[in-house]
Length: 95
Image (cartoon, rainbow, N blue to C red; front, side, top):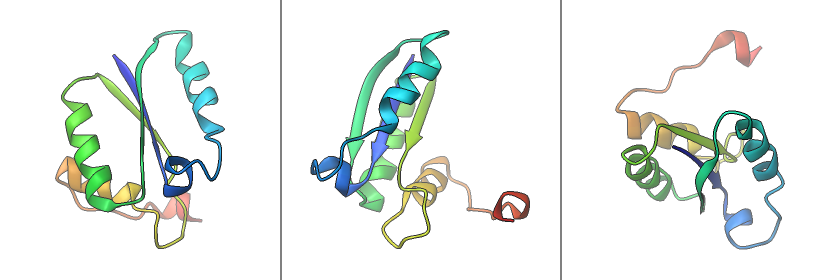
């Protein structure tokens, strides 16, 4: 089972259209069909709780949004918390 999570208050409130979702769904379509789609705002606890909850029900979670440099982008921290690990900076990708 594959599920897709979109994060961001701007997506949740409809301020912008989630243009990433079709690409994600299309990318997995050749091998899998996404069974559920979720949208969550920028709240750290909400993202963490959704990741924990949905990881118990599917084999793969694809997450988009909330990965930028602004203060409201909590996806990476929420993923680390949900997995019970510390965040680590990958110097190669940073450069």
